Image (tube, rainbow, N blue to C red; front, side, top):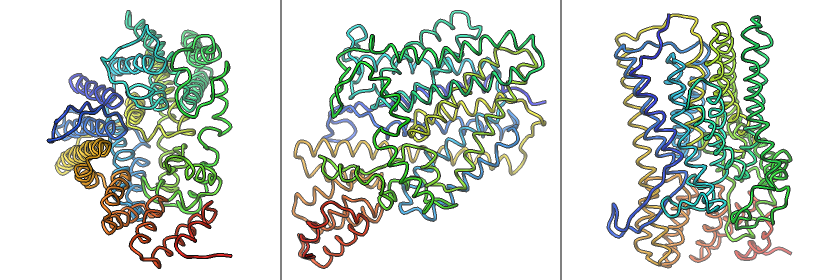
Amino acid sequence: MQKDCPNWLAGWLILILASMCTVAPLAFLDISEGQWIEGARGAMVVNENLKFAAFLFLGCLPVGSVCLALSNGWISWSLPRGILLPAILILIACIVSSVRAVDSGRHWMTAWQVFILPLLLFIAVGCLKWKTVFVVRLVLALLPAGVFVAVMGLDQFYKWPWVSLGDVLPHYQLGSMLYSQNLAAEYLALLIPLAFACVFLRLGKWRWFCFLAGGVILFFFILTRARAAWVGLLGGSILAGVIVIWVLISHESSEVVSSVRRRVILMSIGLAGGFLVLLFLSPYWATGLGDDPPGPNEPLQSNRFILEFKSIFEGQSNGRRQIWNDSFQMGREAGGFWGLGAGQFRIHFPRFIDSSHEMFVDSLNGPMFKQTRRAHNDYLQLLVELGVLGFVAALWLWIRVIFGAINSIKESLDAGDIQKLLLLFGLLASVLTLSVAMFFDFPSRMPATIAIGWTCLGLLVGLEPRQSSSSQFQGDGRSLLVLVALFTIAMSWSLGWRTLKGDFFRVQGSLALGVGDFANARSYYQVARRCQPWEDDPWLKLYWLFRQDSNMEGALKVVQGHLARNPWYYLPMKYEKECYMHLGRWEDARNSVERILDLYPRHPDAFRLKNEVGIYVN
């Protein structure tokens, strides 16, 4: 029989998993004057890159720890059947789709951050047989960060004086340290089911902590107006409740069923019903200085939150319906069986602009051009990037984990282990919340939700009953595990350091540019581009700096380097045309215009573009 995860290893994994799931959402960079490099300017930096760097630095440690424990014989390998094959197929999809990747650097960066490292983390957590008590401890360790984010969000978003934190913590736009209300809500949505599941466990005074933590998180969660996260929590809670109640009804032991059915129903109602009650009553309590945030938002009405909730189903949020139509077309015509490569969605999307053409036109007329970077539907984007192979393998893996959770629930009922059953309900609701939110946004591609989501998936597998005996690695198998551990840590820390360094120099370049220090701005952006050549901003800023110096040859070289990585991005296509015009290379300028109009045949300024380069039309 498979042994439980040793106490010392479980304690170590709880520490590093909790650190990963806490630091990733809270990571920010507070730069002092002159820190790290001479002439550095002070800044508060909160963005996706820093949080991914934190996930890379810490996410590789559980993988390395488990590999080393397996290689030394401290634990045995016991991953349930049906898990490893779809995981290997996802890895194969990442490898084979690289062949079609336009920007191979972006492909491997995205593949490692979004697919490979999370998969390794999932397998490392899932191959251990976890005791319920250790899973509970890990869940409890995740909640303080959620409370911290919620309280900070209340301070920054609604600015209520009774939760004011003053200048103790960084204030960065709306939505707390996650720099976006939507991303904050999608992270918190995964913690709410875990908090309320722990309320029904026999935890003594800790249950009141869980109740208060869940209440504070839910309170701020509604204020974020994050529709995708709302639908995810509602759908995930209902689906988890239906699954568990179905298992209870079909179970033969009525005595056990009757003792747990009431609690499961209360948990489902508490999550879904409590959320809806607070939402419908929000016009009476959700007021404050942040009630009408800056920007192109219309004045909020008394039923504002209900209208926000309804709009997500109608695809009215940020042109989702139009982007979905074009994304599906791209997946069908270009994705194919092998996919276009991880991270390549944003590169290829301009080739398939049809339904979302009005968004392209609006962006041209706005103060800043915005390229569509994500499908706002992780399933469609997965189909585009990893093809049918990756899409089917990912669904296979998730469905297998859910069916494994059902078997775990049945085993808990047979053993009369109500504590484990309720914990399984919380983990299942969290995972299903993520899977529902993925229909409307991109939570599976954000570091905080990746860390929480894949950890919960692994814990569900770690709580599964094992049907076969475990095995020990011998000889070459042990050496291979050591190599996997070293490779995972080296790759993650290398990419994490490049991300951190590139982001630091990019921010310094922006600060230098803001005060007219063009010489330093150029040198900073050069470093940022070397560290993260797949990021667009350093390329665009370097083009502008060369233009400022009237160095059109240098500007053209930068633009063409950018187009080699992102050949259908409108801005560098337009800038290439402008460089050719300044250099008097009119034939090349006309070719650039023709390429633009081939890609955007309904371009609203087509007539002007042609006339600028001497293509006269009647």
